[in-house]
Length: 263
Image (cartoon, rainbow, N blue to C red; front, top):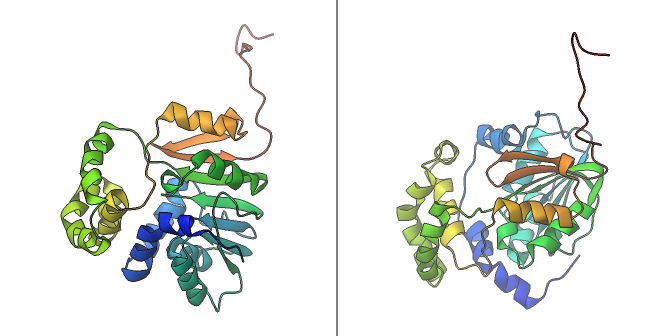
């Protein structure tokens, strides 16, 4: 198993505490929306494939994938040692699941489909992580990745985080119910429920070492530097993308005529 330096563990201490010491709930309906519908996938898309969840926290998405798909192998990558240890307990009886404790920018594996959700904005070097994850895809393998975006709302909330990130974890968790309604404005937030919105509030305002926001041009620049052909990029929503490894489509601006004047 991979080991990680103390500084790396410090960077995820806040998340580790959140995912191992606090409870989160989800329904299969919510898992289906988050892992399939929102990603433009059918429920059987992963059948007979190797799939991975990178920066997997307490393994809730890994659990859903193990129970909702016929994937032949499910790889869970999590940096925080306590969270990875918890996952090994949870999946001790599931032979298809492999839990790897290690840095997303270093861990090497092969997969047909990778989820990198709610995580890349919390890593020290987003481009390095993106490159490593893409390199872990098999030919024509797919990745779904989400980013925190620069918006008027995120920029308005960031000064609040400059205060809340200095609070003890337990105190911020006690305050998170007050902040949770901010993340229930959108329909998806309401669907996930108040308890999940509380976790989202803690994610957003917590004491974790890294948190950054991206513009769309910055994201597309990262995709280019990671070697993704523009025709292999599908925008699923604001800050939410599906990518495919391998050669892209051959596109040009040649005009073609159809109908009465066609030759």
